[in-house]
Amino acid sequence: MILYNVTIKISEDVHAQWIDWMQTKHIPDVMKTGLFLEKKLLRIMNHDQDGGGFTYAIQYLCKNINDYNIYQDKYSAKLQAEHTNKFKDKFVAYRTIMKVIE
Image (tube, rainbow, N blue to C red; front, side, top):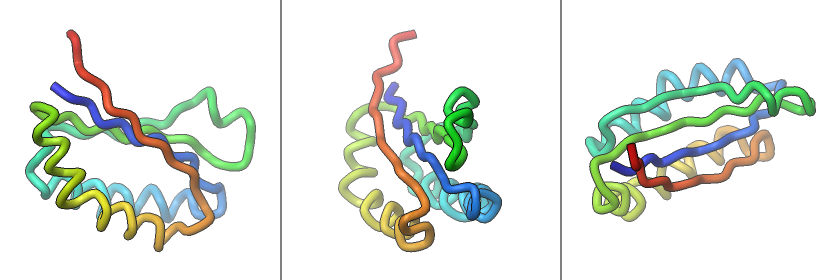
């Protein structure tokens, strides 16, 4: 199993709009690709102390690296561009790929 983790710090002034959009549009669109088995939206509590926004992790679980690579090749650029266009200059993001051991 492969865990695809996207960590995002979102500006306070668009926080409520971002949460709604992630839950109703972006995350469902990622799941509609059929390449991920599960998803989670988590708030990272210890990063909120430094101000300037709220930090979240969005985690997607897929069967194998092949499925993740298909997602990257076919879908990720479009979905990331939608996010960037909607919340330009209001977030920072980084992505991590992890192999599930247990």
